[in-house]
Length: 572
Ligand SMILES: C[C@](O)(C(=O)O)[C@H](CC(=O)O)C(=O)O
Image (tube, rainbow, N blue to C red):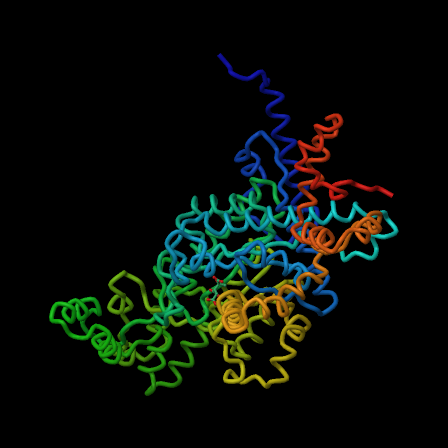
């Protein structure tokens, strides 16, 4: 017995309509048109549930997209920083257009078991923090709105009016597992209200670059599948959520697999017939020898090189053969050539006796975890970013070091193919710009110059709450310890009571000015505190909820008359 009344014809018609709607949506805006999905609309329609939902994430994404487009047009940029705290996020609304929820910060402080930036917390941790911040933004927005409507129209123009609904950009790290983890995380982000999140190409469980061990990335094909999984989930939800394709290949030290020929040019192998590294390391461990020293010694003995490097080294006696090889791989599309294609071209272009001396073995240098050694250059990052660009609207090449040449070459190369591309840029806490070759003047101008020159419209200092907030807390803790309540009163309270933070103004509603002026000082102070706490929103809610209650009972229900003027909505 069928369990639904839907006829086959009606089911098909609804499906066909859905497919047509999806196709029209994908063609409807430049934001959508730049995406080139590897799957058809029919697939997405079939993967959807029949209940259509609308997500605030779409509103926030479109708002962010408009902000970034405006920056791009005007040669300006958004500068934000990382936080995980709703209160800080609310204050940021004054000068920032976006909020960044950093994975490193979440792992440090928003989990039951804190740790460093290793992305080893559950996949729903960052979406959970985004959700909390987004709800608090909505509350701030609601509180401000109600406060504003305590004033008649003419007087509202004297009040500061902030946009608390600041689009949230979040750290999706490497998607936290297999593709279905990535989809679940994506769904959680969309449901949480995120405007944009980034996904990178780091390997799962090996994010440890912040302690200098070298990053491990995944093959290009796996990175693209990861991004596709996220895009697909966003499409299934019919959302506008922006996907930022972050690439961490710059200076990565390892790659998990060599399944994708597009990575082969950068994989290192032993060019001497040495023992496998794993054998040497196992022996060192068994004998109690220094593991790192054994590894270092092995690396020196293996003379690690890329295959092209090995060809160049062995071919010093045959510069013509090497040049012919290099020309051949260039002609064949160097960045996509597999190792066996390269070997065949080396055999063809090097003299026989030179080719016979060529030794290259990338298995010998695999780590005990099975990863291959990797030596990518900026071209590798460009190739990945170009392939990823069709799946996400914004690009970020995460760099360990602000190398002026890499920054320049990377952005120009991607823009040469996608002239309208928007980029994000992250500053790590340890960037030493002057050491990297920038002048003080260039550093000062960087955020704005980078927009005009490269289209970098969104800049983030992700870990401000580690460096900047720590500093602020230290300063205050010293002040409080030394100066007690007097310094609190002068340095904190006095400034805050005069704050212009919308809706937290210690200012009475105009109609009641006289009443307050007539009050004795204590009451007036109480009134100010009442405003400061923002309690008027609760009073307005109570007042509205008790509108049907008569006479004296009303005062009781509303809590000893605390509502005095606080909740009355004046529309004028
Ligand atoms: C942005 C980042 O992913 C983060 O977790 O905040 C980190 C920050 C950092 O290490 O400085 C990153 O860039 O990987």
